[in-house]
Length: 72
Image (cartoon, rainbow, N blue to C red; front, side, top):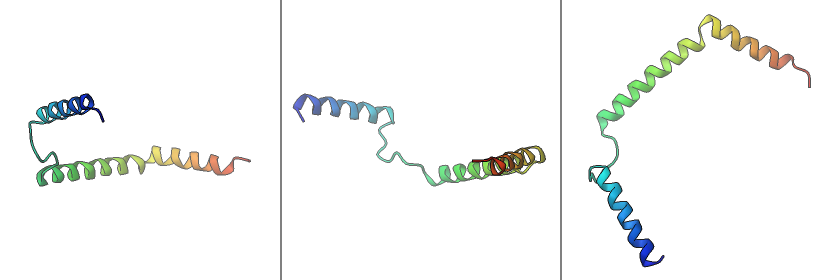
C-alpha cells in the first residue's frame, strides 16, 4: 500500500472513531443485551400470535394445500 493510501485510511479510521465517541469498546453492555432479548421475545410472541390466528392459519393451510396439489 502506498503512503497516500495509508494516510487516507488512518484519517478515515480516526474520523470514524470520532463519530463513535472515541469509545474503545463499541459492543453492547449487559443491560442492552437484556433489552434486546426482551424485545426479540416480544416480537416472537406477536409473530406467533399472528401466524396461529384463524385467518392467517387458514390462508397458510390453503397455500400449502395448493402447493401439494399442483401437478408437475
